[in-house]
Image (cartoon, rainbow, N blue to C red; front, side, top):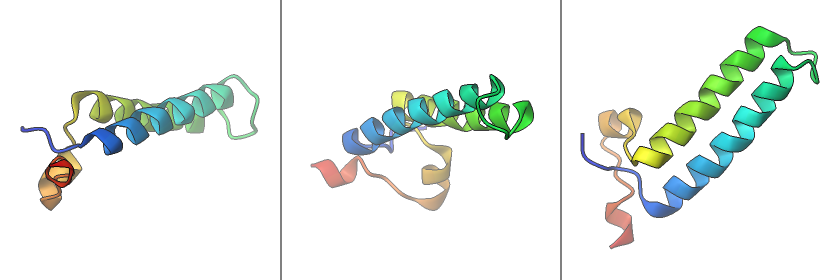
Length: 73
């Protein structure tokens, strides 16, 4: 799969993914009333955002034909 996540999109994904993962970890730790299962799901969503931002490859973008790398040139 080719890169389809541009630099701005990448930065936003990584930053937001880290914040979401930390929020999920807080839920697992009991700081929220959400519970461990919901916290684990939130951590997983944050991890997906960080991975897609780091690799600059998003399967959802690929399926939808979206490429934010082209917008940068």
